[in-house]
Length: 196
Image 1 (cartoon, rainbow, N blue to C red):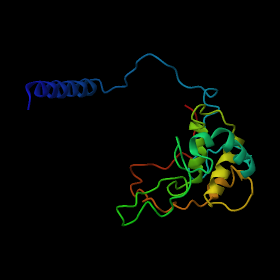
Image 2: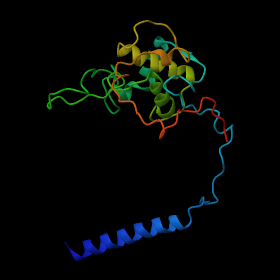
Image 3: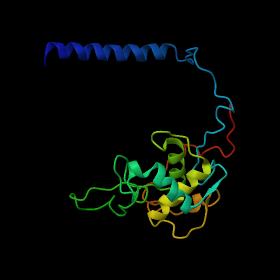
């Protein structure tokens, strides 16, 4: 090993140990004196739905409206048929996540991978469209979620997608995850969260 590499590793280890030691000495809360607590007004547009639908905002959308929004704001990245492009592929790939053929790569999409439809709402609401995240209304997000789910043959009717029925949609990979059997480490979500 080169001398400079040894020196670099020694400095890195020493720096890391010093940082831990400093933290251990001052284990009390560290205050940096910048920023301020988020107010209720700051968080009024923030949503964080849980798999069972808690936290979904009121609203509804239609597949037809979702198609229109998709063509205007999403297709340039995700492709005209949701096949992907600059952005991820959104549909297809069912059954590809687990297979015995090393030549077949898994295809992770909303259709093949995501276990809950509420996750789709959450992701679209927070992160899409890429060039203007958070700009879609709740009704537009419900519409887009409905359109994507319909193109993945996850829903087959034209019923409106609402805050009441989105969590009831059974995603193809809902049972593809192993539940965590350590509830003592991960307490269930608060059913009545309050701003602090």
